[in-house]
Image (spheres, one colour):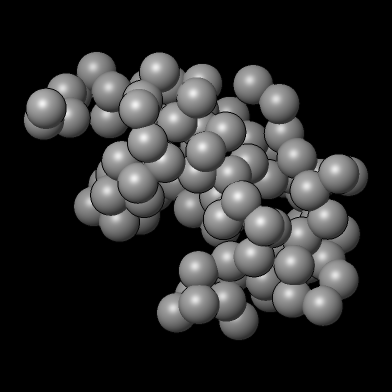
Length: 97
């Protein structure tokens, strides 16, 4: 089933709502948007997130995407997000929708 414009906009709204110093996982956003898989969130983020705080969206284990890791962790650290050994402390920094 193709992703609808409403689903894309809902994901964009959710990502935009994550405050500085906090993060959400792809799965958190998928659940809040009513999507069946976090992969849809990843696809939306790859194609339509340049104007969003993309760096606040992480994998389920608190790690950034490998190809963005240095840049993403640098941005998160600049916002005061707790990071240990290349992973965000989700118990502290996870944003709940």
